[in-house]
Amino acid sequence: MAATDKALAGLRQMIASGQLGPGAKFPPEPELCDHLGVSRSSLREAARSLAALGVIESRHGSGTYVSALDPAEIISRFSLSVELIPLAGVLELLEVRRVLESHATAAAAARQDPELAAHLGDILDRLEATTDATEIQHLDAEFHGAICTAGGNPTVTALTGVIRGRGGHYRIFEPGEDFTAIKRASDRGHRAILAAIARRDPAAASTAASAHIAQTELWLRALRPEPQVDHLD
Image 1: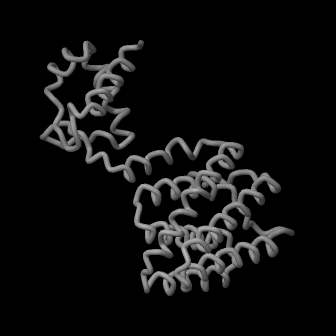
Image 2 (image 1 turned 180 degrees about the vertical axis):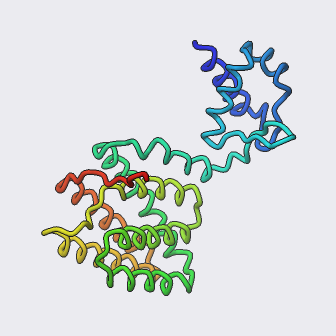
């Protein structure tokens, strides 16, 4: 095992076992190196890896601490890796999103927030009125994000957001011969979800969400679009 891997494994074990719990301050560096049997450089490299994952944080003038280990915060860091996944992997992730978002949509319907339906309706009015691909993507994310948030599980919201973010690179709403048909079908899917939520029908909401995301999977499989990238200046 490489020295950095050894240091990383040791730190992970200390955190996973509760020896260093959420918010705990790390022991002094020499003590930690001695405990793990690694050099300072290896320890620091391992610490940087965990910091990138949101597991630990450095506080200027105070030291290094274990983060709150909030599941949603840690999962949001997955985007750093998920954004590299090609289309075949994105399709697998969409299956995960379909399961999770169906659950979240059912939960949102069951919670019966009286303001949710009106908020979603406003988003859909704007979404149906536009043909701009970027605006469609943003409003679609706002619609699904609001539903997941209303579902009440921040971890599910974070994970579906990460998956949706990667799927957004494969834009199926770019102008073309299939645009109008795809846009109309997508709008109908959104309205079916909203109608079930407005009726406070969890079963129908779950079914509508599942069908909508499954349709997106089918479009991606059929069209096989190239990912869109933002060019750096």
